[in-house]
Length: 261
Image (tube, rainbow, N blue to C red; front, side, top):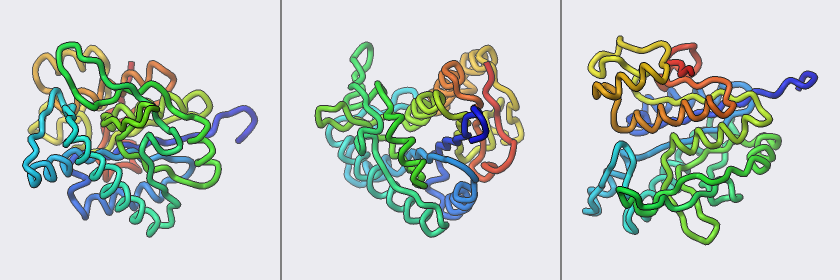
C-alpha cells in the first residue's frame, strides 16, 4: 500500500449461460486467474439448479428474476451452488495457479441474512443480506486466498438461505469499500446492458438511473437483469468505486456497460 491509498479489490460476479458453456467458462476463468491484485469471485448457477429441479420433478418458481425457495428447492440450490459449481470452479482455478477456496455465506460467518418478510409474495427460504464479515474476507485476501462465493447465506440460527448472487456480490463490495478501492464487475453471456435485447451490438455504454427506469418501463430490461442493475446502483451509492456489466470474455477489457449515478 502506498501511503494512505487504499488497495484495489476487484469483485467479479459470473452467472447466466456462461456457467453452462464449458469453453466460455474455461476462457473466463483464464482471464479471472490472470487478474492482478486482490479479487473475489461470486458465482450464480440458477440455470443448473433449474435443470436439476426438472430432473427431480420439482417445480421452479421465479418472480422478477428471483427464485422462490421452498424446502425442496433449498436442498437443490445448496447441492448445486455450494457443491457442484463451487468445487468445479475452485478446482479449475487451482489448475490455473489461483489459490481459490470455495465458501457459502455460512462458512466463517462470511455473509449473514434474514429470511425475506412476506409482503406481497412469500419467497420462502430466501435471504436478504444483513451483514458481511469484512474482517474474515480481509484475512483470507491477506493470506493469498481468492474466495469463491456461492449464493447461499445463513441466519445465524442454523438456517441456510438462498440469496441472489448479484445481491451478494453487491453487499460484499459495499462492505469491502470501507477499506479497499472496489471495482464490481458483473459478467454474463451478453456484452453488456442492451437497448435492444435482440441485438448484441446495442450495448449501452453508460447507464444512468433515469435511462434504466425508461428501459424498464418499456420492458427492454426485465427478469434477472433487474436485480443486477438495482444492486449496481446500490453499490455505487454506498462507496463502491465503479460498477461494470460486461461479457465474460471481456473481463480484461474496458468494455460493456458502466453504471453511473
